[in-house]
Image 1 (cartoon, rainbow, N blue to C red):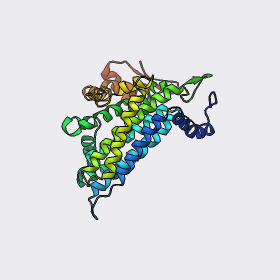
Image 2: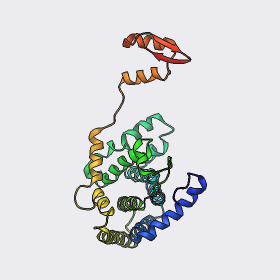
Image 3: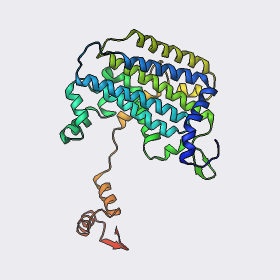
Image 4: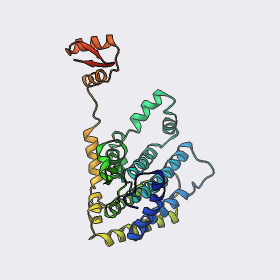
Length: 314
C-alpha cells in the first residue's frame, strides 16, 4: 500500500489492512492490546450490585465506557499509519477518565452535563475540571499524572494544528501521507498499548469506588499486567521498542509522562498580552475606522490607513 495518493478509498483499506499487518509482524503487541481490552470489558461489565444508583455514578460509568471505545479506535488508527490521528482519540480517552474522576456527586454531574446551558456552570466547570490545573493534588490525582502528561503531549503532537503533527507522516513525491515505516508504527503502537493499561487501571479504580469489585474483572486486570510484563521482557532488547518503553517508563518511579504533567503545571497557560491582542486585531482588520484611529493614537502607532480594502496600521 505504499506510494499511493491520499484518497478516501485508500484509507478505507489502510486501517484494517495495516492494523492487521502490525498484529502479524509483532504478535506480542496484539496480545498485550487484547489483554487490556478484555480487562476493560470485564471492568465495565461489572454490575453496580443494587437496583438503584445515583446519577453521578451512571455518568462516571458512561464516561469510562467512552474512554475504552476511544482507546480502541486510537490504537487501530495508529497502527494503520495515522499516528497523529490516533493521538487525537487517545487525548479524548484521557479526558473522559480525568472528568470521570471529578464526578463524585450529582452536583458535579450537573456541572458537567449542563455547562453548555449556563455560563455560571461553565465557569465552575473550567475551575473544577480544568486539565491540568485542577489535578495538582498528588494525593487525590497522582495516579492520573502519567495520563495527564500524555494528554499534554498529545495536544501538541496530535490534536492542534502544530507543525509537530507532521512529524508522524511520510512525505512521498511531494505529498504528505500516512506513516509507512513499520518500525515507527510498531513503536507508536507500543506506546498506545501502555497508555491503554494506564487508562484501564485508572478506570478500575474509579469504578471500584461506586460498586463492589468483580473477581472476574480483577483476574483479567491482573492478566493484562502479566501480559505487559511478558511483553516488556520479550522486546526489552529490541529497537525501537526498548527506547519507547524507557521513554514512557513503567512502574519504576517517575515516568516521562509524569514529568510532562509537572512541566505543564509549572508552565501554566500562555496568554497574549493586551497589546498583542490589539495589534492582532489591527492587523486582521477587525476594528472599524474610528476604533483604529483611537487605538493607533493611544499606542503611538501613527495614523490608521485603509489600503486596497485591507485595513492596516503604519
